[in-house]
Length: 257
Image: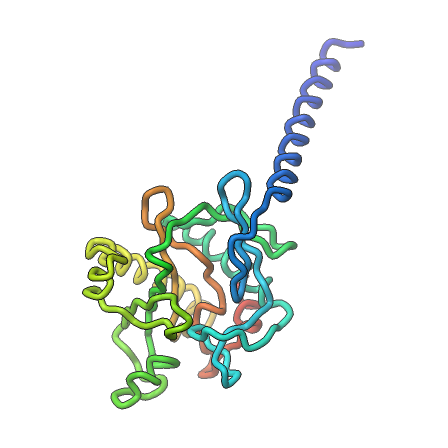
């Protein structure tokens, strides 16, 4: 048998062995998954390699009245396709942020299984949400309706809220965040700038599609010792209008893939 053929056969065998090992590692990771948190919109599993798997669900959050709202803390129902849409949007924006060298926890995704693998992230306290508001809407109007009206232009208002469903995610000033040892002033300043940058890119991307971003919330944590964008970037995180009307979760996610 020709030596060249034997060499090619040996090379092919080594490559097949590598693939087998890779597939076996993936199987082992699945077998050793540990459920860390069953959340409202996704479940979180710890993998054997130290990373985490986010399993997106079809649940929709909003208010007890039944109104869907990205700021809501109540699961108001389930709509088929919401989880898939959330994952596709998240993957789209995390891949986009690579082009801008914006650090995130994103590693990879399996769209067919509604799963995303991310690097471990250390939250600030039990979690903080960072909000950018371009127009008055939702909870902003409920709190400050004496001084503003729905849809009124805002000068890019930045807010921080504590993830605390029992207390309706209370807002916190920088002084409160520092006093509670949730952020340092330097971290607050850095995240403020990061939020403006991240949300600005999303706003411009939506604008190109004829869509208007009204408000949006994002999350940051510590990944590999640095502040990075975490969680997801989906229709459930933002309020978006088209031709003056609010888009629902499925309508928005179908436009961003």
